[in-house]
Image (cartoon, rainbow, N blue to C red; front, side):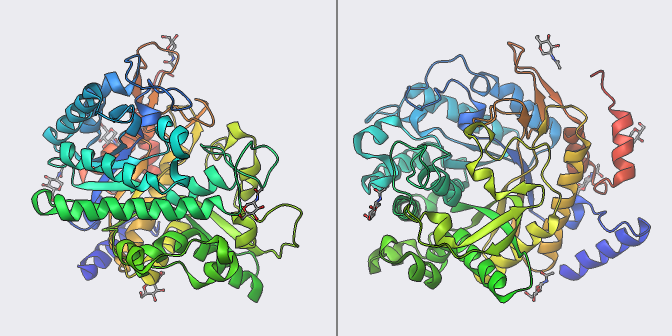
Length: 497
Ligand SMILES: *[C@@H]1O[C@H](CO)[C@@H](O)[C@H](O)[C@H]1NC(C)=O
Ligand SMILES: *[C@@H]1O[C@H](CO)[C@@H](O)[C@H](O)[C@H]1NC(C)=O
Ligand SMILES: *[C@@H]1O[C@H](CO)[C@@H](O)[C@H](O)[C@H]1NC(C)=O
Ligand SMILES: *[C@@H]1O[C@H](CO)[C@@H](O)[C@H](O)[C@H]1NC(C)=O
Ligand SMILES: *[C@@H]1O[C@H](CO)[C@@H](O)[C@H](O)[C@H]1NC(C)=O
């Protein structure tokens, strides 16, 4: 298989006159899924900013336009579509399932499956039922493990005949850091900055991370015990990944990269693969890091059938020794590094709230970062099956999004290189299928293959150049278009805008 792949690539290279990144869909293993995605909160609409409504009202966007959107997915040629279920839409208060919410997801999932599009469903993508925050503090409390498992049970039972790929928690590491160390993401806890009204940055991230791992493992066990034999699906976990390089060749910076990997990847993938946190984290975080009991360790170990990779960024890492500050240590002081991205500074974590990660016109195109991440997962965590659940770049809303094509082209090429070198990567999802409500940056910067006119009451969708490109790639067995192809595409689809 690999030999055949290599030969194909070689021929493609030879015939393209030395341009090193021409490849086609046929170079990917049989069964590899190409898709795109969105999340409930960002696509459906009809959700109050603070999650504290029943979300059942129907003034929404995706919630009403899902039939049209599935049609667009078919036209684009997607094999798979990734989306999340809104816990609070499905179970709006402690107790019974909301029949309207249930029916909405059933209809949507059935429509996808009837059109041959595989649903990849995420159970938890940032939106938390407010009643559980109010009742016991959400993920800070171990009660959330049971409630999450009950919610997962409803989803497996109701949707599992059609859904074969479940992701429990979306980018659990960055959710936890953003929500409980920096306070820039919901629920906005921190003590490391003066901006938050509550929180403890030195303890809460580790408590929440622990509870998320246990909640995932508990849902995964339930699936294996109750559903897997009949439904035959798999349950995975997802992490936000960064391609790290040392900023200098000094030993300290090399060690800092190891530390960054332990804190960003190992924190979650360590327990899932080996049943415990990395030694380095245990040493540095000490008694603030919860300890797995033997039973918990056995529950978490091996509980993820695949690793969901969220990937956008590269960072160069410099070792930093923090003098004991007047404030408590937080996740970043524990990690003891400073990071700089190319065109992207890690300090974006202390940017104003409305600017988190999104107010950049295009991320740097550094596909080696994707290859490094996939290689590291392969080597360090036993080469698990991987689905790249998010990859893409923000731009100001624009139909002529050639830079997005260049970005996707380079990163999909990186995925192919990794597969050729033995990574068990089985799917790739562009973030996002269409422009979404980006909670933290409004509508100005968006990731979509499809343009959504947010001033139009009908929220009209129009394919961007990148949608035409992705579609050409998925349908025609053509080579992934190089720069000449992009120019041709541009003239074929030059639009009135
Ligand atoms: C955070 O928790 C630790 C351990 O319980 C405690 O020592 C520290 O004072 C707390 N910090 C804040 C800001 O509450
Ligand atoms: C390819 O895989 C081999 C063996 O796993 C590894 O030693 C090598 O570093 C990888 N190459 C790249 C470019 O990642
Ligand atoms: C968006 O919709 C508004 C209202 O219908 C319309 O005036 C405007 O021209 C549309 N913009 C684009 C780019 O289609
Ligand atoms: C693409 O490849 C598949 C599988 O090899 C084949 O069935 C299909 O006809 C091809 N499509 C085109 C447009 O060449
Ligand atoms: C552009 O249009 C020409 C003529 O219809 C067609 O041959 C070519 O394949 C198209 N190229 C792309 C990239 O769509």
